[in-house]
Length: 201
Image 1 (cartoon, one colour):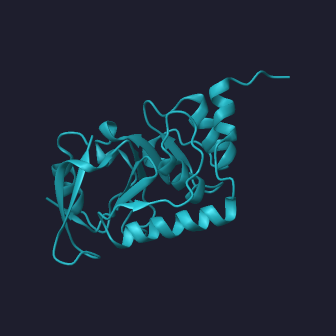
Image 2 (spheres, one colour):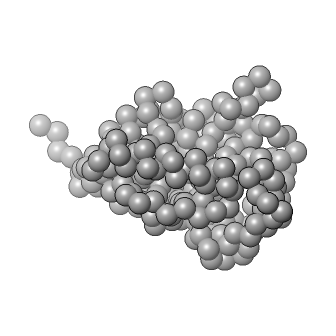
């Protein structure tokens, strides 16, 4: 019998204790966050996360990833435990390149460059990478000023941990709209979304 490393076992044991009810609740939370960019949403029943991953990021992955959605793991999140969680609990294959992934899981500090991820194409702009950003300190750090669909006037969101140059990289992505990536920022049991439609200053 093959010996399983402890962190890999933790990844295999992670996930929702109530897969149907909790996943539905998380799906509604992600939809709410996407429809109201920059609003912080707290998950009611978050997933158990493998070591190195927040409950929010684990919940989003357990809800959205499946056999048909390849997942790319960024540096620091590509260990055995998280990989086992993605392939074992989420049943999702691992992508060799970020551009080939339906979902990417990255540390906040390692978010850039955005153009390494799939941006979709003119015929199918929805075939882009949704980037799950782990460790973004929501409600803390420099305030981003958001405007656009789903926002009345403008909305401020403090986010700590994002790399220098993020706002400029987002501005360059916005120039190619409707192409681009969507972000789900995760920390603890909370999340917020930055869909590609939003303008950030």
